[in-house]
Length: 100
Image: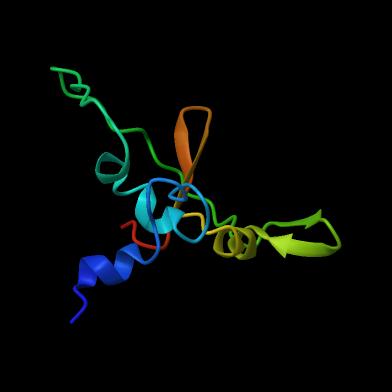
């Protein structure tokens, strides 16, 4: 029987974890795949960024031989997280794959 973790990991290993589609699991499990060092955070609280969210998922652009929306490109490139910040405000957030 395959565990949920093994199923999510798929074929990801230390040689391909940054390549799609293994990157979906790899970027969330870097410490299991390569040497890392934990870096402590700030001892003082960090103020959250102000939010003024825009719906830019339908933003369209030309690339290669086709027209893409931002949402299509994020799915096609196995992007798991994207945050757009403009003038110090969070304007768009996207989480896909295994990110929540």
